[in-house]
Amino acid sequence: MSIQATLAGSSSTLHVLAPCCRRSARILLGRARSFATTNALSKEKLAILGSGWGGYRILQGIDKKRYDVTLISPVGHFNFTPLLAGASVGTLEFRCAVEGVRKYARQVTYHEAWADSIDFQKRSILCTTATPSPFGQDEGGRQKFHVKFDKLVIGVGAYANTFNTPGVKEHATFLKDVGDARRIRMRIIERFEQAASPNLSDTERRALLHFAIVGGGPTGIEFAAELHDLLSTDMPRYYPRIHKLASISVYEVSQHILGGFDEKLQEYASRRFQREGITLKKGHHVERVEETKLVTKEEGEVPAGLVVWSTGLALNPLIESLENVSKTKKALLTDGTLHVLDAQGKPMPDVWAIGDCAMVNDGPTLPATAQVASQKADFVTDVLNKLAKGRTPPDQEFKWKNKGSLAYLGDWKALYDRTAGGGGSASGTAAFILWRSAYYSLQLSWRNRITVPMYWFINFCFGRDITRF
Ligand code: FAD
Ligand code: MG
Image: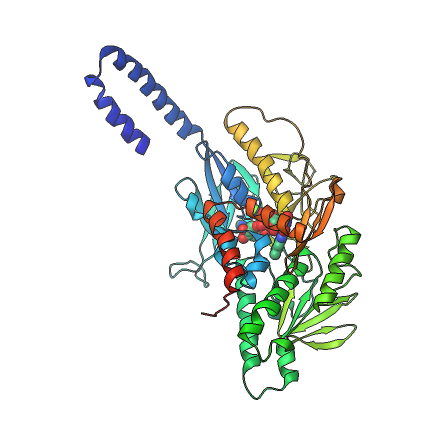
């Protein structure tokens, strides 16, 4: 509209120009008009499912002038997952760990909705609004609608795997998004306030202040480390009479924590945790979670005021529901160029899948990380942008560049491991500086490039503020 209005305005002012200027202006105007018309007519509809490391990255990089983009995601933000553990204990404010998608609202259509099913033949996605409304159609106040597409990128991620352990969904907390981080922070403060009330025995207080983490992978370990920082540096100030009764245990079914990291680094992390008083329960099987306890095969009932569950990934229900596609129990299968494979194993030319919900058929098993998701997103963005310009994208396959793994271990120490990618490794304060620099440089907006270091600095000077409101 605004282009046309400008053009109409320009043509009415043409007559005041000198003849030669008039001619050039007409040619320019004609070109601009034909570009605007063909562009509007030939714009293909691109649908993106998910606003995570895969989907949001596509949203950022896609040529929004050449595609009619629709983003469908049940949450209106992107989660900067590596900072969630810190946000859950107040090292950072919640806002620092998210990017809103509505900032692109002038250029793309956003639906705060779930994609429920995809009809690849009709090129249509059935969606359900995520927020109930008084004018919704079903009993829950939700609305169903269809979104048509010419091209589709599926980046819906994965769910937390509970291994069907009873009570996990009801009583444990996951750490997958900023909502979980908020729930965890509220629960920690609630438990401290409950434990601070008079008339409780120290045994009861210890039960309330036992924080259990199930899963010794990078997420569980980083959360344990951040929580330990909170308990050892800030809680003594806020709860001087009871802070010593708090404890942290990590339950891991295997004999190793930080699987995927180099063995020497795993040992370094175990030693650090032992020194700091974090109990590592390796080879322990959690059989059930209840409101105020967990039950393990090895120890029976163990009281716990908070159980954080982080034991790996399960298939997203949307992927589970898809028919006529190739998939495994873990992910949707794609070819090397990230096109989704149909049931016969043939690539669908206009459908791509990236991130935790997808894996390359017969390719190396890549870790379910932000690094892989964003590299796949960059690969698909490049292909889509070339297609939109009428250029043939190179027929190269996706290749993952391993930039190394980082894990925070608490007390300004971390691990860096690039041994699998043929590089080196580091541990301790040097790795911590690398950790902070890496996550600072990966920030996706100027707002967070300012707020993240600001909160790190404020909390360094004044301690974490965990006031509940
Ligand atoms: P996600 O980021 O999970 O995004 C999925 C998106 O799809 C979400 O927006 C979700 O709302 C949406 N969605 C779900 N279902 C539907 C549906 N039916 N319809 C539409 N939208 C849907 N990786 C690293 O490389 N380094 C790290 O340090 C690191 N730290 C992590 C810390 C934590 C606490 C966690 C949880 C993960 C961490 N990871 C890290 C892993 C990394 O976050 C994931 O691999 C990455 O998020 C995968 O990106 P994705 O886009 O596939 O999925
Ligand atoms: Mg995504």
